[in-house]
Image 1 (cartoon, rainbow, N blue to C red):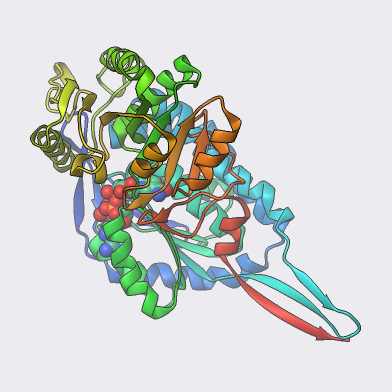
Image 2: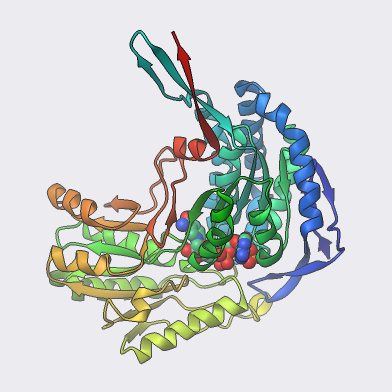
Length: 480
Ligand code: NDP
């Protein structure tokens, strides 16, 4: 069985404790690799390596830094099949999704930040005949990047690439349940010529190595993506240390369809938005609001389309819905399905585990599930389930649907479907959401600010926002 290693100072090393955690394939329920159970000793080694590499990396000409990052992106792409298979096995997501979305995007993250780096400008303000103020943007030093299991390499690199581009060294921690592609990334970095110590990857549990990274005094910036509760715990430790914090947290996103929308496109996208990656994307639209006039037709078509989604072995190219991430998560999703029934929901389809034959007979599969007749204020519609469970709700007016949409503690993403431009603008302005997609979903321009409001997080990633986060602005006032 493969034993993964940490990546420290450009080398693969065993954890100091020699202890390993089991890594289980969600589609089979079997242990298929062992993951270092890293601790504070491993972190000290990584901090030492990063500190050693920092002065030279921060002083490396932008062109050279950008070339190395672009090379990492190219190499990920060259190894697309290996990465996609590893991601699919580790997460249970359909291999087609890993091949077309996750891995290409990870490659693009590196290329994108390599590309925009040289255009990253800072402000200057002149006080006429008195002085010129120039703001320097200097690397923060060592950045701690902690990422979740749902889009492992995609989200890990979304943090690492801008941190490195801005001249920082990084200590990264992927989710311990999906470590494989981060492990492979270390090999790519070696090949691409990233100097030793610039990127260090520590595997292990959030409560040990994750919180040790957050609490380490030599790491002044923490970029975290994960659950809201973990985000609050991280803020509790990091805020009194005055660390820079970027928190990308949970969501419970509304998908709003007005009667004048392009019906077919809205329907197909609603399906994709509810069930992609088994509903385990922070941007998934799990609360689907449909204008009353088209409600019955939409409900019927939505349920029929849901029933056509093939649940199967993630490694088969025909599979649309794979396994959910873990036994614990599988049980959590099923408990929410029971809750929805108790809350008076009408089960329209799904609502049960799926037993597959052969290799996947012990995997954690759940049939895509649809409810209606639930109040927008019930727990099923207020709490993040993060699984293949969607609810359908009718609405009469714009005011009513905005009230429903904004009724949750989260504010990450929303999707609005209408042909009325004025309404699209009005609704977009009123939605409490960091991202609004009009007549689309998950259409990403990497230059745009990405992140949530309310309990969905603090700060924005993407484009120059990310480069700003990973740099310290210093104003230099030059007197004439
Ligand atoms: P978690 O919050 O459980 O974990 C995220 C990462 O943090 C993991 O690497 C985890 O390690 C680590 N971690 C856990 N506890 C601590 C701690 N005390 N200190 C430091 N690190 C810690 O989230 P999940 O992995 O379960 O991911 C799902 C969540 O992520 C959902 O709520 C989802 O909405 C959110 N998410 C948000 C996105 C956004 O952009 N806003 C995008 C994608 C997901 P370990 O795995 O060992 O526990």
